Structure formats: structure tokens, C-alpha cells
Amino acid sequence: FEHGVLNGKRVFITAGPTREALDPVRYISNHSSGKMGYALAEAALDAGASVKLISGPVTLTPPARAECVAVESAEQMLAAALDGIDCCDLFIAAAAVADYRPVDVAEHKIKKGSEEIMELRLVKNPDIVATVAGLAEMRPYTIGFAAETRDVIDYARSKLARKGLDLIIANDVSNPDIGFNSDDNAVTLVSADAEVSLPQASKRRLARQLITQIAALYSRTDSS
Ligand code: PMT
Image 1 (spheres, rainbow, N blue to C red):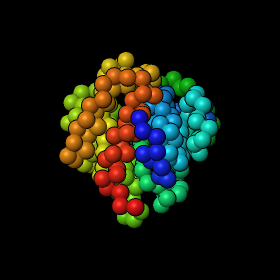
Image 2 (image 1 turned 45 degrees about the vertical axis):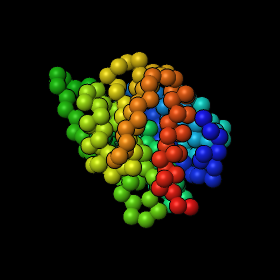
Image 3 (image 1 turned 90 degrees about the vertical axis):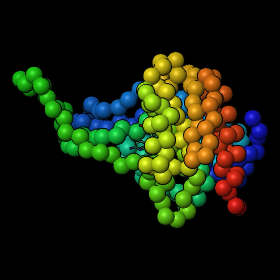
Image 4 (image 1 turned 120 degrees about the horizontal axis):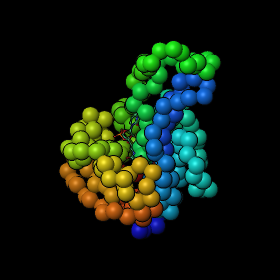
């Protein structure tokens, strides 16, 4: 791991889950712990970057040297991501953003009724990483993750294209030893012309390998 490979670069990282409120006491969410995103923030700082860590609700302590923005919902995460985006050189989306949110958020706690079946109406959330990748001006080098349980590389490739990303990090989350909430991960970096697999390691170690790879790919595109 080389210190200084991201000297002078501004990196935004999203981490953790989002919470989509149903009423004042309930929400829809997922099992993301934030470990992968926080490890990437630490590694990017060690590589010399200044880091904005945009985090959903997690129990981790953010690295002291990062600017940390705490959010709950996908809409709040998008607003925090776009705030100052014109100064951002690299955008890394490690968050597990809820794809949908409830159409209505009840003002008061929803009471249990007599019905056996209750239906929720959901509406699609904005896609944060695709919004950043689609910026017409001052677009950062944009990196997503793809959490998949089957056909991992194929789905990652199609997400890379659909979301207009520069790079996608394919993550097989069918194995409970890696992915969501585990201490380890194993990934494959997929870009238009390359595929690099990084075997299972602690998220901390893997994050340092990822930052090394990302910095190398980014430097091929960076003219400043
Ligand atoms: O947090 P940990 O417990 O450490 O777990 C790490 C992780 C498994 C959550 C992480 O490594 C990971 O894979 N993150 C992406 C999880 C995910 O939701 O993937 P996806 O395939 O649904 O989304 C693809 C990409 O689009 C991701 O970069 C995601 O951040 C982004 N996205 C998705 C939906 C949305 N509305 N906005 C987004 O920006």
C-alpha cells in the first residue's frame, strides 16, 4: 500500500444502510454495517485524500480525519452526496441504499388493525451513484459496488453500463462470510476493459488493496 497515491484528491464515500421511514417508530432497511465504506474512508485518508464520508445509521466510529455527514434516508444521502460535488475527484458508493421507500410516511404510529394482510405501497428512490455518474459538468471518477447473490460478474457488468460508472466492485453476498455485516470481504473490480479479483481478506486490508487499484485506474484518466 503506497501512501500518497491520492495526495490532494477529494474523495466522497457513501457507507452503511439507508432507513426509509414508515411511521415515527418504524422503517425499512437492510443489514449493511458500514464496515466496508468506513474501511475505504480510512484507506483513502492514508493514501493522502481528503474524505467526506456520507453515512447511514451505523454503530461505527468514523475516522477522525474524515468529514462525516450522518444521514438516514436515500433522499438525504443524495442531497449530502451532491453538496460540494463539484470539488469531488472520486466518488465511491459503498452504501446499501434502499431501492424503494414507502409512498406515505404516517404522521403517527400505525395501529394494528383486524386485517391479517397489510399492504405497503413503495416508490422508487433516486439512484445516488447513477445521478453522480450522470453529471454533465465536473463529474468525478465514479465507482459503485454491486451486491449480488448469483451471476455476480454478469450483473455487475450490466450495472456498470446502466449506471454509467467508471468502475464497479462486484460483491458476492450469497456467502455469509463476506459481504453484508461480516468482517471480511472478497471482490472483483470490473471496468470496461479490465477485471481484477481480490481474494477474501479483512475489509480493512481489502480496502487498502482497493484504493491502490482505484488510484492506478483513476490516474490513467486524470489530466490534472
Ligand atoms: O456495510 P457492510 O456490512 O460492510 O457491507 C458492505 C456491502 C456488502 C454493503 C458493500 O460491499 C456493498 O456491496 N455495497 C453496495 C450494496 C448495494 O446496495 O448494492 P446494489 O447492487 O443494490 O447497488 C449498486 C450500486 O448502486 C451501489 O454502489 C449502491 O451504493 C448504489 N445505489 C443503489 C441504489 C440507489 N438508490 N442509489 C445508489 O447509489
